[in-house]
Amino acid sequence: MKSFNLVSALLLVASAVSSLGAERKDWAVLVAGSKSYINYRHQADVCHAYQILHNRGIPDERIIVFMYNDIAENSENPTPGILINYPNGSDVYHGVPKDYQGSDVNPENFLNAITGNKKAMLGIGSGKVLESGPDDHVFIYFADHGGPGLIGFPSSFLYADDLSLSLHRMYKRNMYKQLVFYLEACESGSMFTQDLLPKNLSIYAMTAANASQPSLACYFDKTRGIYLADVFSAKWMENTEQNGTNEDLFRQFLEVRMDVSTSHVSRFGDFEFESEEIQEFIGGVQGNTIDKHIMTMTGKPAASTAAIQSPDIIPATLYHRLAAASTEVQKAKLRSQLAEELTLRNKISEVTRQIVSGAGAASNDVVKQILTAKAQPRDYGCLKAVTTEYSEKCFSLPQTDFALRQVHPLANMCNHKSFSTSGILASIRKVCQN
Image (cartoon, rainbow, N blue to C red; front, side, top):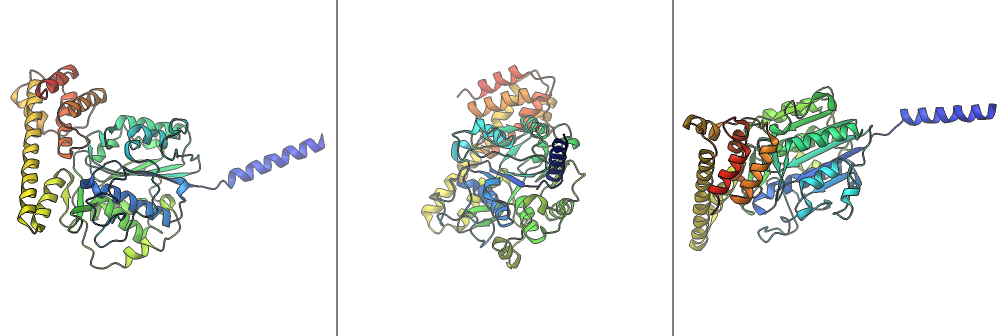
């Protein structure tokens, strides 16, 4: 009996010591949600973020990377196998795990990865998912296009209500002690409003823009003929590399918000732990490669200098390339591409106007309001149905950034009593039948 009591006591002591001494692990999920060379900056942003986390001690087995991986070896890239994220910068592509590439970069796989659904990911990419526990910290960084209530993947969207449901699921499964989510996208604030990200989930989110603004790109590179980075992403990473060893989350928010003059950087969720240092989430070991290079680099322009709104990237890029063209053949081709782009944008706007006008018995004032208002989506069932139909019948929303500006009118119709989902769908089919 005494022997049994002694064994039981030792087991209880061992259990208590183990509980008190549980080691926190840092996990990260990095996502570039776009494809094609024109979106170079998103994959460069994510590769740069990987280098920061890797150099600061987070092992690859706890970093999950989603990116289409069609940029580094793209025929348009003059430096094959190399991506940079700032002017004259170091290569950020080397060593980056390609856990999920090509068509594997989609909302379903992302949500399965962050909720730890290992079974669903069998046979897909690396199969890596978050296997974090109640003592761990999780960092999620996402860079792509967005619209009200949604963020883009190469061929589809992740909607705010589905992201919210998965974050709640992570919380209920005790998959983290604290979670930090940085989101680079237009209207990114619309993904984390009060109803979608309550304060009791131990999740802190910082976004590139509020719920109604575009985000911006920066660092146009003449050699590559492309924008290298996004303003918000450039600033949070530069700030981390310079101050990450002791700067807290709130201080980083204040400094990044001050440095990003082109959009309203916003924060959401649980502010109770924003006094914790950023290194608690992106690794605590000071790197000695990318970090030192950036901190000693001189002559780097401010990220907000010559920044361009994401929906205007294509015409701005063509203007830059036209100015740099050296032959009449090149100039003629670029002028033709620019004319086609401007014609397309006018066509997209006109199609949307016709859809709104034909979708319900609304007055001219209501139509004008629908076309210009920037309200938060309320009916996600309607929003999913009409954006899917619009993307299939009219213009591909995931692959046509200017068309994403039409999500506001679509969401406004879904919110308004003068329109029904069936009426909106019928109008889309009628207008876009050809």
